[in-house]
Image (cartoon, rainbow, N blue to C red; front, side, top):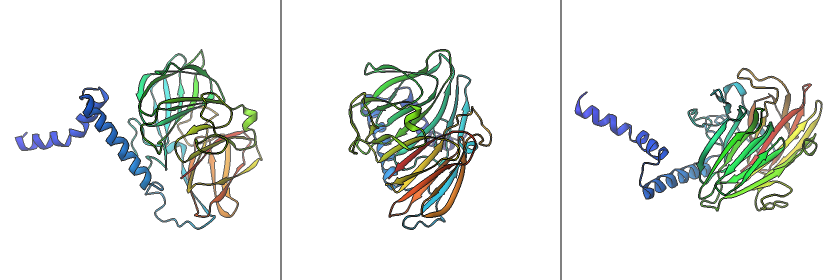
Length: 328
């Protein structure tokens, strides 16, 4: 290889070298902190500029009180089978990269994970992001550097506001697989103090109605106690609702943000192929547009300037577990 070509090769690999050095903590502390801060600021700027994945709505027009839907099909998500972990990625994550699906407003990660018994994610660190775990089945053991140790079960929601930095582990507890959704949001304020919250919602709490399980910390009815009733607090314009909708049930929910995201939980079992199982149809009270979704499917939603009300109808023969994100 010619010396000039060799030099150009190393120049193009500089981002890779920096990423590896960050990952293995080989950089001086001040430089490492600077680079991590720059990365978070870049993500935040992209959040401010982002109203939707650019390629998704280039031909759509949105009018007051209307809703527009773009499906995110289950089989199109990133997925990996590591033996101990079977996972789906709605947005770019780890080795899965898709520039058309990186984040949506403050919503950065929706991972649907299944972790084998007595295995899991060893101790690792986070900064800035607010991370919540929504347990679908099994039990999830959480431990962190603030001294929190807890075993979460179905219906539990645990939220960690990583802020200036926290280390934690998440593992399947007991002899059964744990199925949970790992969700990350990007806060509007950087360098928050790390905090830990747990909320409990029974199946009855969510049966045939939208139940608010996460909401902005300043919203009415939200408290920032470690344990408490009502939704878990988050420092972003994100409100999360959950429902268990029986066959034939139709629900409505007013949306306050400029966008929303719907995710149908894959409760019938791990399926890398075309979505099946519980079936719902989403629409709007003043919109003729409708979209059918099955387990594992999701949908990007754009909302008119005047706000809108989204509808969800279970058109199948199985109970559907659905999450609805109301986003700025």
